[in-house]
Length: 272
Ligand SMILES: NC(=O)c1ccc[n+]([C@@H]2O[C@H](COP(=O)([O-])OP(=O)(O)OC[C@H]3O[C@@H](n4cnc5c(N)ncnc54)[C@H](O)[C@@H]3O)[C@@H](O)[C@H]2O)c1
Image 1 (cartoon, rainbow, N blue to C red):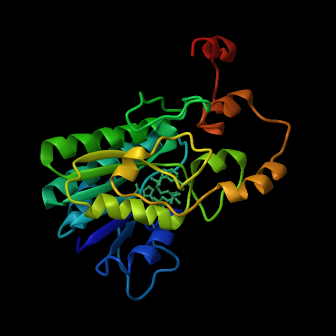
Image 2: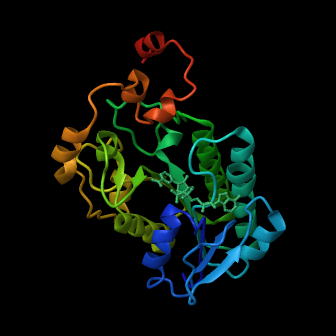
């Protein structure tokens, strides 16, 4: 991997990854629809809207591997999701195919499977249960990843990221926390490990309370160093005890499941 592109580089994860990946991939190219406020002189930046197909084609030229973070990163209107996460994601995979890109990391999300219950532990091949339009768009990206892997030979890794942060800040995040250096470990597996065709892995650290079975990532060499358990006592003590939505508390996707909820929860719960 010589020339690696990060999309969504002005965002929360992208901003951290720029610094963490630059020593690993010195020819790093970064892109976003908005200019990062902290752009450094040694960074190669391209301001591109992912919805602009010719511009995305141009962006992908000469690139070996892509870390695709760009897009709407929370629930949005259908039009917002459509432009950035559906059309934008399609343009990215198409641009990559035309340019002969070898590997892609797709930033998927736990919200692609958010309607699984907290009581269950799910692996990468579980039936998807998206909890939002955002979650549906992540499944679309995973689908594109699989299509371009098996049909066009791009090695694709979809990372269902839990919550990227320096520390887990609430009880839900004790289960889904991802420390930044562990994300780098996962990205390096997806970009560098020989033989990757298509993988769905969970973007989490080594959390005792994990809802995700990440044994496939471990098989591929993932050795996370972050552990949420040492934070558990303080996080549990600080958690508000009241005012929580039963829907949010029942499912892995939390408040994304409860937002706009209009089903009869008791009936649905009985059907599980
Ligand atoms: N932060 C997390 O814990 C987390 C969890 C699960 C998944 N993810 C996924 O990881 C990725 C990065 O997350 P983040 O927290 O850094 O999000 P973020 O919102 O901070 O960054 C996303 C970036 O994408 C850019 N973007 C949006 N639409 C675009 C478009 N049409 N063209 C070009 N750029 C566009 C935005 O300008 C922004 O800088 C997202 O795809 C998100 O869905 C993040």
